Amino acid sequence: MKLSSNIHTKNIPARTVNCLPYEEAQLKGMFMRFDENGDGRLSKEELRKAFKGLGSHVPGLQAFFALFCTDRNGDGTINDDELDILVKYALKFGYSIK
Image (cartoon, helix red, strand yellow):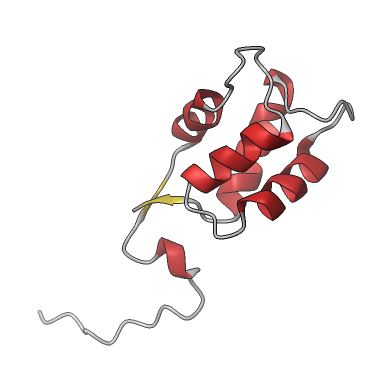
């Protein structure tokens, strides 16, 4: 059986072609590694660094939108309760292992 080499990928984000998606537990761990001050929360700057580490081309903008969409209590950080929401947000944008 011969597989076609003409695989269409126009509906798949470019960064996910030939990449494996992160699992939720992996993303949680990766985000929390950027908690530089160890307070258990991610600030906008820590989020920016995390998205840069994940390969975002616009990490500052991605951090802004992630904070806007996932900071439920409005304190300007992502706490442990909001981390699950952040992970789902990141998975929605197709962050993957290169």
